[in-house]
Picture 1: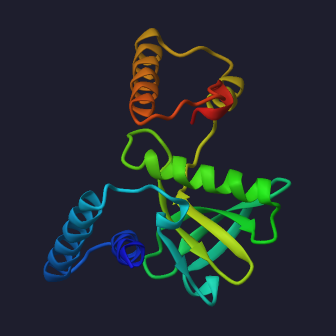
Picture 2 (picture 1 turned 45 degrees about the vertical axis):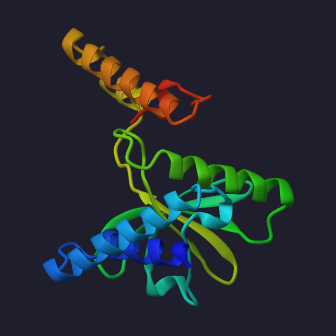
Length: 192
């Protein structure tokens, strides 16, 4: 039940650009109640406690705009939240995945949940489930990777810019480590 309440709160906050103050107050109070209850129950972390919202028709929530990439197990698309018009990225994984793929999916969702609120890390908004897929709805990051930018401009960054970027990168890695997450594929291709 707590998962459904939390998912509802996040869905409202992420899909409604400006909430009526009275609704925002109620959502905030509801969120505090959920937090308090979870802390009193030792905050057990399970995949089942990640907020998953079941929808009969994914198109009632998302308008898929463009396929960004496809792998063995999943595809990633650029989409828009129907209610707010907010641009998001959606990773769609078939429910017919192998048990190993399901475990990897659970691990990914739990890692993304651990990293919620960490600056400079792509944020997960919520997970949608429909009859055929699990859909991770997350922040859409646009623009080139660090490698693509350097290849396109064919010149190095100014020293001050490079220092600022290095500082942000180090601070982000430290923040991830404090939450028990180690990025095992840190490279210029994965920096936007």
